[in-house]
Image (tube, rainbow, N blue to C red; front, top):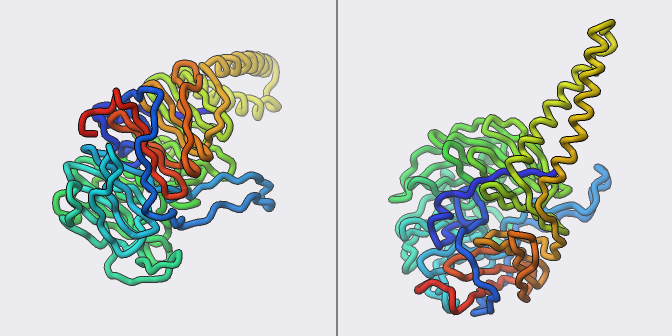
Length: 453
């Protein structure tokens, strides 16, 4: 079943930058700014070493549960995912334990800052400040222009260290990055439920704690997301938790497919990809909205783009949701009628049988209408990541990237890169590609990049 919902965040639509992971606090992976094809490679940065992943890939098969070709669920540090702002590129390194800043036009390193453990998540840029967390358990706020420390804050109560991935890391590492909204930085610390995990809100201006709560039953890992009212916390191979942004109270854990890919639509969350590449959407009350097959997705007003391991497709989103809701209601009603049929007689039984026949006919019509919601479907040989830049979908693959038209799915451009292209970002007329080798490739069109970007 195919489904997604998402509205582009206003911050993404209004800025040429890409100031955090996947562009905004909702992790939309979308920018309104077009790229002018063909693009040419302008520079490659490959000096920071190969990423040192926190977790290996999954076993190939789960024979006990009869699941084969398992999908990776903990993928947050497979490459050096970047943020872009004010003509600069920022990333954290799990290899050299530094936060790096590059010139967006040349790839030249402008500054770097050492933490005391791997930095596995993309920094967030806000108001000239860079905010990032490290496996040392500390949130760092740096001056984005020169890398000087403005403030730092340890989230856990003390600085205990344990071996982790060949390093000495905090007993409470920061494995969710930092998400910023309305001058508040939200962060978690902790990996081992038995040692307690912390969820906190800090003032961007000075690092002061607004609220902090502790929990002894979760292992937060994966990029945090924020909606207007809620903070969403991915939980490793479990399903995400929902928190109230006002006071940090934990509201619920969502059911469905686990994994650390997620995006927000209004106050709903789409997350997965589970063991088999299936995603779940749940609303703010925790109710299941829909499921769909896919690894990634992009949603704009009216049209959704689905990315599986083999194809890209475009979907009439609003009509599809209406049909899905109606189908669910019909199936629920049919189940109740079927259960009661044996106890009915006479006119009541005949009425129920007629309703069952009508609903079966309508379900057939819905199935046809659902198929008609698919605007186009195209083979895609780049299954590792996808973003939207204006009227093009950019997909990352093994040693390659490609651009597909949102109008009809036609491939309009492709290029080679070094390694698996797990991380994509677009800003200032340029495309940035991060791979599992530690390389960051920059592609641009000299006639279309913004001055100073």
